[in-house]
Length: 222
Image (cartoon, rainbow, N blue to C red; front, side, top):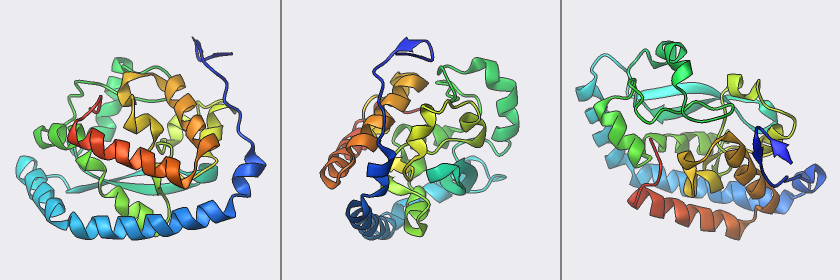
């Protein structure tokens, strides 16, 4: 199948099967709550250090950054992160659209001028993503799942691409824990759909272990 200019394996999801997996979703939600609460408690000293570093680096901006993303069934929610960019980053993005280095409905720049000095460090080690544990606790995200997209990204999705929105988005996923920014949009979608199709408790655990490895030895995060 030709999809977005690349010849990629087509991954078709059985939506009814996904919806009927009540037991798996119950176990996953329980694990999400326990693990994310434990993570927030254990990582609280790191949260404090990062918060101080962000304020020292850029006193005018906030420590946390929230952004509207789309989750399961295209439902909007507010996603939390440590602020890694200048305070007017969203406005500056309009000027940088032509500098996008990732194909498809996604924006990424390796040398993004909006990223602060502290931001480059916390993005490299995915520390900026840690506040998403709050999203996991409140139920808008899971620990493992597809990356939550921006509304403007979803507006460019095909029906095939929208299959990745059949489940809750995750703090990490198959794409994030393996190739991350080393591939384009179409390959990211393919990897997300492989996860949606194969998801299980053991698969989730494997991806979480891969994620720990990536945090200790960063891949293509920027």
